Length: 231
Image (cartoon, rainbow, N blue to C red; front, side):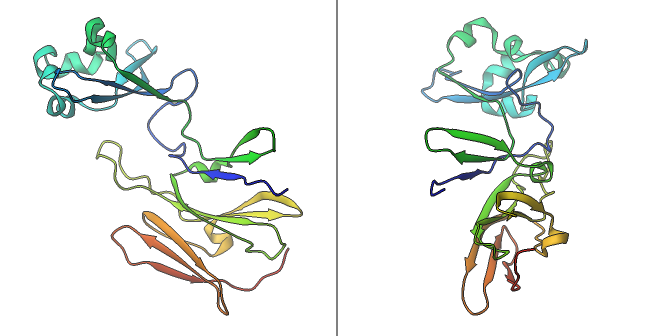
């Protein structure tokens, strides 16, 4: 329709956190030690011993102790920490000194459709939620004159407790039968398969169109585009 639509890459939904409107992931930013530096404290929601959702710090005791001596002074031991909510840990006085609170209520990957006067959010299908989407290429891959999108990603930069986000092997989101971006194809269907953390992709048109995928700590992968027509 002539308006620019957007693919919004995010963390995806295959992770250890609960993130939604009721239980958002948060970052509290405050100067705990009054040294002129803001200390970010990420939090999430997990069930307590009674099965009730409570807000806890994302980081473990050792990590928090490295961030500020406050935690070593005010938390007795690992047992206490394991059951303490963020409000137990910071207490009313520090909570009142919070400078900024940032919230995330979704980690899903989306399409943002530009409808002229407003935008419409559409969650991508389940297979596009298995890992972060960090790189995309827009091109008419099936020759139907509608744009398609090649998606890749993964992230190996998280801590040991979180692990690798590594389930995205490459996805192709096709426009089909006049419906934009309506057909999601796996790597086994499209022939586009990448293992690892994809940081960039480049499509080069020409006599033999090629796609270059840049991977973290690995050699780039190059794919040639087979000529095709609309199914």
